[in-house]
Amino acid sequence: MIVYLLRRIGQSILAVVVMAILVFLGVYAIGNPVDILISPDATQAEIQATIARLGLDQPLWQQFLTFAGNALRGDLGTSFVYGRPALQIILERMPATFELAFVALFISVLLGIPLGIYAGLKPESIGGRSVMAGSILGFSLPNFWQGMILILIFAVYLGWLPAGGRGPTVSVLGVPVSFLTPQGWLYLLLPAMNLALFKMALVIRLARANTREVSLQDYIKFARAKGLSRNRIVTVHVLKNIMIPLVTVLGLELGSMVAFAIVTETVFAWPGMGKLLIDSINLLDRPVIVAYLMLTVVIIVTINLVVDVLYTVLDPRVRLSEVKA
Image 1 (cartoon, rainbow, N blue to C red):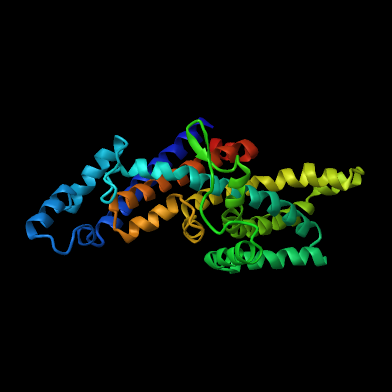
Image 2 (cartoon, rainbow, N blue to C red; image 1 turned 180 degrees about the horizontal axis):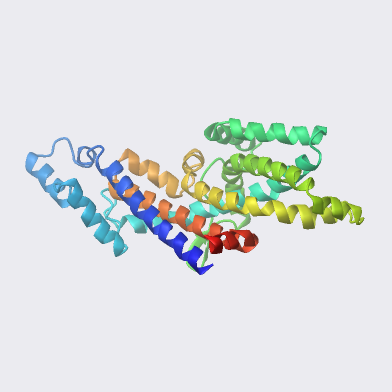
């Protein structure tokens, strides 16, 4: 177990280093933020002074070394637009994004796993086929289009829910959250459902496929022969065994929800990290863009590491294979 853990930590660090190089080169080699930040009437001396102040007069490799050295100390640069540490600006928006992602993941699991198990146990029934047809729609419809339809139905026509924004928040250990207030839930439901639809479709299909596979195993047939009730077979034997691959996928999907909630946050004006990224791209605020991407990489790599460790806990065969290796 220790050897496996050390190997995974080493792989995670290597992935972060490689992504840091790719992200920095990809962002800093494109565009010129000075054209946006400086007035068109600025003199050449003012332009050169701004370029020197932002450190853009140095060669690209020297800029990267400066960035890497500062990053090791927790400094990911100062925003060109806000004049504040980029990491601080992103951390201020992080609670909103994490809140949205966790609620969306909760909705995906709460609805996706039961529907997937039902479709797996009764694949030829009308209900099972309807569930699979709905999952296909969840995969096929564009995320931004789903968001606009949800706003049109529930905010414009029915008037049940607000169309955008985060709503009132309360502070928990210094972190603002909105799901602890009834009014905050009204603002949270639409964007969370929009973000959850695609993931719910994925969970349904995975749960259905694994349920059909597990249902054919000998231990399920033996449980039926012993006379165990259908509910006990499903909740104890089927659910436990389909959760092993689902835990891996759900961990990865949580990382993708955090990283790719950009469209949902933009459509619903949700003040999270994704909307900040879009605004920073429009202004070519390179430090904020790089800080966001690097923080996202670290989050995804960390989640993958945690998921792998949980996988070894759920499935001892992983540990045995590492010992043999």
